[in-house]
Length: 327
Ligand SMILES: *[C@@H]1O[C@H](CO)[C@@H](O)[C@H](O)[C@H]1NC(C)=O
Ligand SMILES: *[C@@H]1O[C@H](CO)[C@@H](O)[C@H](O)[C@H]1NC(C)=O
Ligand SMILES: *[C@@H]1O[C@H](CO)[C@@H](O)[C@H](O)[C@H]1NC(C)=O
Image 1 (cartoon, rainbow, N blue to C red):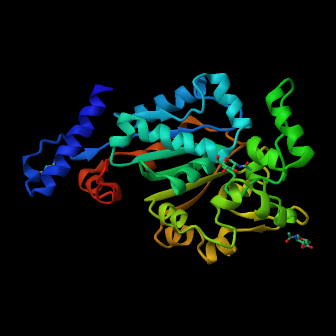
Image 2: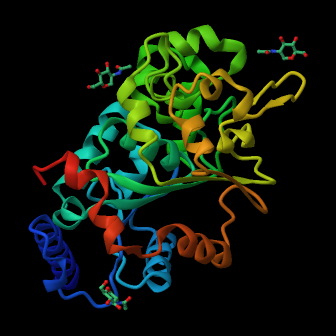
């Protein structure tokens, strides 16, 4: 931990000295900075799981010096798991905004990278669009439901939290109760129920800027990303439709897939995705296999490509340092 504090301390010194035009006085080993990584896990998972710890260890081994923060919505694993099914996503994102801003290392870093697994991916996007303090540099999402789900996944036997969420979704996904208490209801989006969705969706309709009044901050924040990579699992049958991972829309009746680039959200650029794409910063990727069947090989490749060290000149020019003198 001390080591990281030192890195940021010297970085702050670097910024300061750059301001007084004497950068040559700053000692710096290889002129690069390793940004921290924040990870938001998926439905039914929790921050204490071995799988999460393995991912964190892998991120550290691929890019030594990476400080990893696994986002949590409770102090215990069971509480954190419960929060993946139940809660008001708006409030959950507020908690995460406070959590990241209060972390001494994350909050003093010039930026962080972000990794979202499944629903954690669209929630990280929510964090970026609503708070982004500390700001995210590169965002990678695996099997996320950026355009929502039109079916809830089947629950495993004896998973009562999952079954409880499923029962509530069936009994009325557009009720105020479901929209404020059942997490997957808040990113439910069935193209045949678009009116109810636009009126009631507590999270997705807002964060995707689908309502008439567009939130300019959402667009501004999202298009400030350096890279946004979305991975779809080719044989995903858990997240329905799987193409939601790439922001595409699927007509459940005839199976037609409308890619992001042909949708108004992109063409009218409600979120800055078109701008990112025009700059080569939006990456549409696919991964083999079923939902979240991640291989170590794919993770390593991804961590190298998106979460590697950045040049110091770049880290000192990240927006935060000019836009937020308060940090
Ligand atoms: C770091 O930057 C300095 C000054 O620009 C340069 O002389 C030095 O070779 C760089 N070191 C490395 C390891 O790239
Ligand atoms: C979710 O929480 C926010 C913030 O407390 C609140 O404004 C909103 O009404 C809640 N959503 C629902 C559907 O109750
Ligand atoms: C889906 O496709 C069917 C058949 O082509 C069409 O009648 C229907 O309007 C489409 N639904 C939506 C929501 O576009």
